[in-house]
Image (cartoon, rainbow, N blue to C red; front, side, top):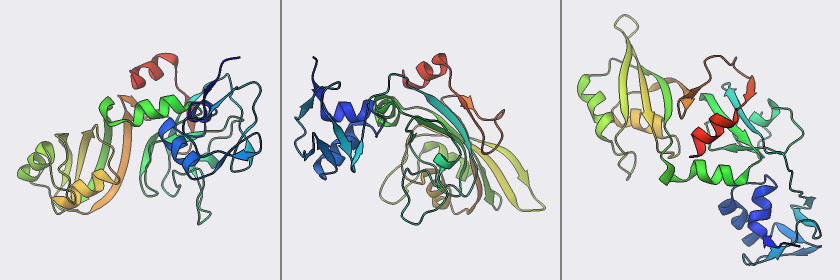
Length: 238
């Protein structure tokens, strides 16, 4: 019977990416046959050994699923929330244990992928893959062409210079004094788009992620979801 590394087992069981699973092992959150394991080199036999994460038995499901959710504002993108706030997992009712791929903050709406494939999570969230994410952002004030160019070339968001981004003006409302931009980035820094806009001196009034790797949520109602096709999964992860 083939043995596999414990972190690979946890990833295939849909807990998280292998990298995150390694953290759980080191934190003493994983048991094998009733014993806490903290060695990353530990191997298990999937059909024989009992693996628990936080005292819950984890099994590898044969069916890998990939879901695209149009996240509404007001939901957190975490599996567990210490403040017991509404989670995106409350919106997707399936029997498989899902984890979000990356994050959207509570006040950002739009495209979010959920899956039980830990290897997919690792591929998609690793910086080297440079997956484009498209945002529509409404800003307070009239954004000048110079500031748009600054966003395109890169801005300092607290000791980090952002990579070049694709930015275009969608709308300028002189009367309401607001500007709507489309921003496409391939990085995944925490609250990056908000910080980029703050760096050019404009407050974000609304933020929506319209697409991931060109796959959009225009035809999905807020709070609703659909399965990704095999072609879409391949497009995102390759």
